Length: 337
Image 1 (tube, rainbow, N blue to C red):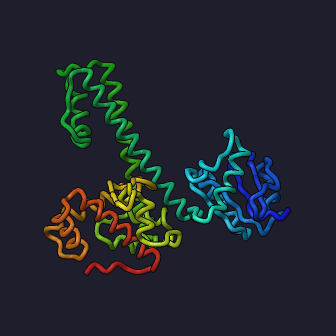
Image 2 (image 1 turned 60 degrees about the vertical axis):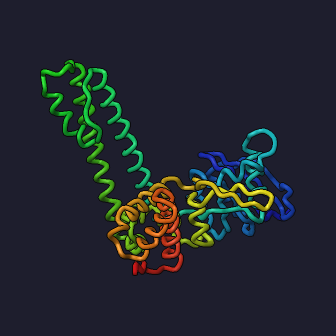
Image 3 (image 1 turned 90 degrees about the vertical axis):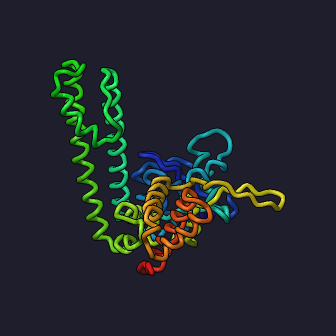
């Protein structure tokens, strides 16, 4: 049987590999160990390889492309509807082939090593920031147990905490002071690590030519520019700027029926981290529209006048996404005038 498509359910050591012919009938569906996978796939050099876009898929996508295979990565939520019967590796691998054969299926490109390096740095910073926030909340909770309240803001707390530990007149016990001193040292170390990683991210943005160009756009700094490059690459994976914005969940949610169109709030699908960065960038544009004279600010001011500030923020975020995609796709500089 001529195998034209192979679906792989990825794992750590044992993969489920399902091969189908042009009609979609399975030729085989069995387990293959990690060190034998390439050998197995080389028996079908004309086959297309399909996988879920999950942990490890970018690595295998890069390796298989080097060997000349066409690789299709499918978002997991698009594979799930094709799983028939019980949830197991055999059914999952066959579902991947079923999803890959659909003519309107949406695929993603395997990330390059450069994109992966940037993404790892972003995730590392994001995780440490979240851990620091949890640490600050815990410190405030402990202080509250002893009736000590500090004004809002992490900088105020960081400044007040050493003073509270030295003040013998407050209700803090010796055990509480020891615990809070340990948490304070942990907080300072977290700040040091976050600053170190953010400095590395800024250096990466300066060295990366596409990111340098993107930073010419108002509201786009090092973090947003590098995140866009890590997510979109050269922009070729997206058909248009609107397609890119839709993948970030920055387009209206539609509930139309009977010829009547009804648009709601944004879909919030896709990469929520990058969407949040673009919204933050949009706020920085909105904040100075009354003083700025560039084209983007004038356009934003018009949207604010017609629809209000909050809707204008989403509109500007959508606009930024389209501008950034166009700059990546066409490899152009930003023209602010």
